[in-house]
Amino acid sequence: MSAEGLTSDSGRAYSDRMKTRVTGIGGIFFKAKNPGKLGAWYRKRLGIPVENWGGWSFAWRDVRDARRKGATVWSPFEADTDYFAPSRKPFMLNFRVEDLDAVLAALRSEGVRVIPKIEESEFGRFGWILDPEGTKVELWEPPAGRRRRRAKSKTRARD
Image 1 (cartoon, helix red, strand yellow):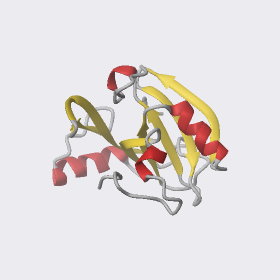
Image 2 (cartoon, helix red, strand yellow):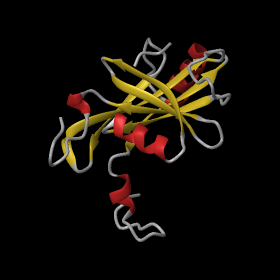
Image 3 (cartoon, one colour):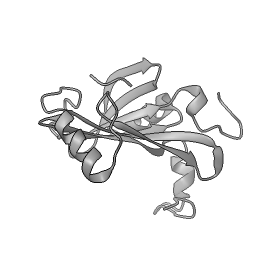
Image 4 (cartoon, one colour):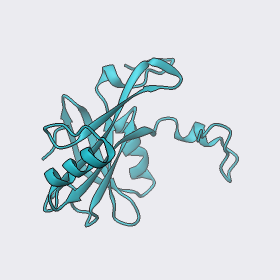
C-alpha cells in the first residue's frame, strides 16, 4: 500500500512527514530452539534456499526504478541470543531507512526510546529503538551503493 495521498489529522500529507524514515522492510529475525533444524524445515517445506550462515536474503528490485536492488533478510537466531535485548520478544523487525541519524534524531525528539548505540559494518549502519510494547526494532541504512537515491542526492553480521 502506498502512503501517497494519505493525510494525518493535522492535514499534512503522510508521505511528506515520513519521507526520511522507513523505506522498506530489511528483515525479520526470530529466535529458534534449533535454527539449523528449523532452517532445514523451511528449505524442505517452503523452498527457502537457506544459506550456510543460517538465513536467506530475498532479492528484489524497486518498483519505481528497476535498476535499484534491495534485499529482505529472513533469519532464525539461537533461542538464547542477546541480540534482541533489551526486548524480551522472540523476534526483531528490521526496517530500511535512508538517513539513520535523521530518523533516530526525529524519533528521540518524539519521545521514542532510542538505544544509544550505532553499529557500522560493510552491510551498512544500524541503530535500534523500542516500540511501545518493548519490541526491539532495528533501523538499517544500507551502504551508499544500495540506498535509494534522492532527486537531490546525498550521497550485518549475525552474532
